[in-house]
Structures are given as C-alpha cells and as structure tokens.
Length: 329
Image (cartoon, rainbow, N blue to C red):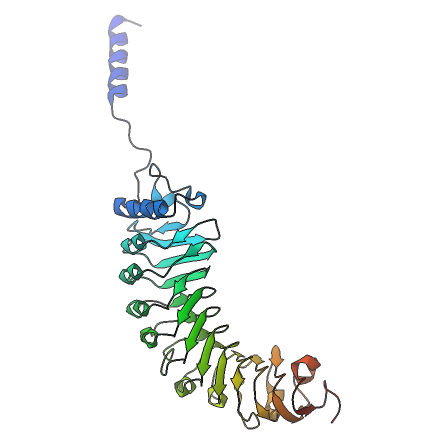
C-alpha cells in the first residue's frame, strides 16, 4: 500500500469518527407529562412501586403509564396493588390528556378525592377502589361528561349520593358499593344508559325512586342497606334486567302479581319483609341463582323450571311457604 492510499484511508477514518453519533431512539415522552409524573412519584415518597419512573428513561416505557401511539401524551395512569402511602396528589390533574385513572388495591392510600381530577375532561374510566379514601362522593364528577365507568367501591366514603351524578349520561357502570353512604337515593339518577349499578353495603335509607322503573338496566345490586317500600315497579315483562340483588333491606310488597322479565337469571330478595306468594311465572325463567328466604311469603312453591333445583336455604324462614324443596304443604 503506497503512502497516498494510506493517507486517504487515515483521513476517511478521522472524518467518520468526527461525525456526531446519532441517538439510538428519540424520547417520545412529552417533557411536561414526565415532569408531572415525577412530581407524583415524589409526593408518594418515591415508592418501590414506581421504581421504573426514572428521569433518564423515556416515560412512555415506564410501568403504570401508557402513551398515546400518535401524540405520545400520557393517556393512562394505572397504579395497582402495591405498597404506596399518602394521598392522591393534585398533580394528577396536570395530565391533560388522561383517559384512564386507576388507583386500586392500595390500602395505605388515604385522604379525600382531589378536585384537581375535575380538570381531566378526557377521562372515560375512573377507578379509585379498595383503598382508604374518605370524605364525600365529589359532585365534580358530573363535569366529566365522557365518563363511561366510575368505580369508587371499597372505600370509607360518607355522605349522600350526589344528585349531580345523574348528569353522567354516558355511564355504562357505576360502583359506589362498600362505603358508608347514607341518605336517600336521589330521584331521576342513573337513568341514562346505565346498565350496571352497584350500591350495596352502605347505609342508604328510604324507598327506591319511582324513576328507576322507567328505564332498563342489566345489573342492580342494592343489597345490605336499609331501603324500604315497594320494589315491584322495577320489574315487568318488557324489562331487560338480568341480575337483581336487593337482599338484606327492609323492603315490603306483595310478590304475588309481579311480572318478571324473561331476561332475569339471578334474583336475590332474602332478608326483607316481602309477602304474598311466588308467581307461577317463575317456572319459565332460566335462573342461575334464586333466594327469597327470610321474608313473609306463603303458599306452595310452583313446580317446574329451575325452582326445585335450589335447596331449602333459598326458601326457608318464610311465613308459610311449602312444597319442594321445603316440606310438603
């Protein structure tokens, strides 16, 4: 190899090494979103659950978060089942494109639900459950018109159900069960497209609003409250309800002439003050679960369908029910 060739190769190598090294991958994460997430982590005391939230890494790659594939803005924050203590920080409200917000199964999460969440107008799912949140059910949820799922169950929330929640006409399901809610169920609430309503294990009183009778639902669980009065208007041959649980209340009405929809597969009315007899029509329904025990029912249990497939515990402790699976009349 001559001197000229050697010099050319050396010069080429020098020029190549002098070129700037391209980044292996440009960071997708929006810097404002990253800043907010790091504030959230700091407010919780930098827990191990959020160990992947390191400023040197792309926040779109962090656990518990999700970025939009096009805009790369944070659209989901899901903090689930870990050792995390403190209150939900107001900084959560500074993730303007958030669609899903979940804090779930965090027993050391305390305090009230921050009003900053009201700024998150793109939210479709809110799940703040299995924590130790306290205070009232916030009225500001009514401002989140895109909500399709609201779960505040298994907390220590108190006060009444705000009637403002009736403005959430896009809800597919609402869970307010397993709290310490009191007072009446508001009239004309959850009457939009809501198919699933869970209000069980609270301290709700009074009658179920008549407005509920004008709409169709899929699942209704109002069990373990102190509700009273007539429930018969909730049923009807034209309804589409599948699962009904009004057990362990103080409901009192005549069951004899109630018309049940063909869609009904689960009916739990145990521990109430319901009287009359079991309608013959119940033999036509494809029950997966039935319990009318601890009421004031009387007469012979109709024969047929699924009624004899349940054991005596589904019928016992009534005034004078008889017939299989109970003793003969």
